[in-house]
Image 1 (spheres, rainbow, N blue to C red):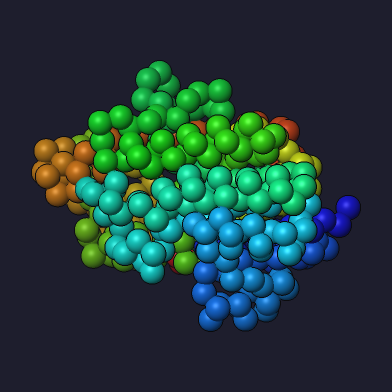
Image 2 (image 1 turned 135 degrees about the vertical axis):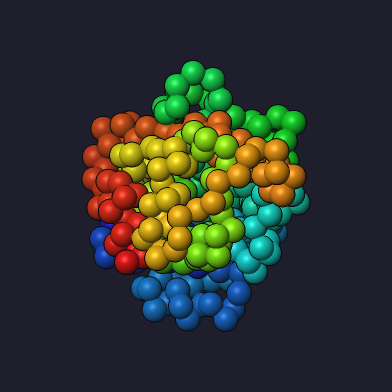
Length: 312
């Protein structure tokens, strides 16, 4: 069935991969950007393009009312260098403010616009990389809560993710908990640090994380749209892994020297508590539900071949 799909955040790293997949499957796509200069790039992908400020309720309401979509897909973040500056884990709470606002205020504006326009379905971006609850095993399902990181600089970001899941859940929509993205434009800053040997392993680097290629994340999202899915889905690859495994492999694929290893205490001083938790205590995620309920098939089942394909 051909659907009218409204992609909020169409020029982000995932939006740029999602829009063409939706168009290729015959859907009529309206995609948003905050910059008039980017309208042409969205039109080249096959979408109707519109400038929208996700933090302005009037702007959001007008854009959604004009598009009259069947489904809204919320992919708005402020993670790019343009919006947030250089990634700063030590001051996570300050660095993440643009994304926190889009996941709280922006989500509320989109949901209100959806209700006003009679939009029947809603899909939103969540996050499932290293932020599973830090008790029990290393790999978590959708039944396990996210770690709110209380007492750390990441708490406000984790609370914003909780807001997305609660608000979208109440509206009968789907939240796609994406793992760490890699693919075109997604890991450039990390790879640069790896090549400069400025991305060290911390302690024993036993903390787990989950990855997903942008194209696989997009294909799962298309399935959620077409099936009008409801609930939370971990959109990660088949191989959750500790940093001690994935970071050296990333370095090798990038043609860099192996990462250095430093103890926890200097890492805490240099990069902050959140970075140490990621590296030493992080909990990753299982994709079993998404594969079972959505029929999702991954092009890159593991970051091992994915990193090689992207970087070598």
